[in-house]
Image (cartoon, rainbow, N blue to C red):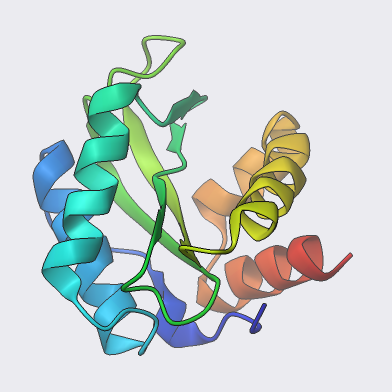
Length: 148
């Protein structure tokens, strides 16, 4: 997986609904060259969200998808000060998103990335760093997590 860059992070994402946030994440994926079709990736994320909320808990959601429109595995991070109802497992609204995408044939990659992140997201210090860090701090934290 390619290391995250500052273009993979938005600390003031716009939107106040699941659809609006996922649309912005799909735009980020397209702008970074990770997807060939923004609409197809957005549909992938929306379908996944309808199956079961990706709200992980503690104010964090991990929207993710596997699609032929994805050119290579990627991770994006977004945050906003206001919270959005994401139907998270703990009932808490969400204000941090870690978005994952893998090519259609990359199921092992998706499982590995999600597993790596989920082992970290359960730790309050990791959550606090995601919620309070500036772009460079979040970038370093996620790159370190995904390459270790």
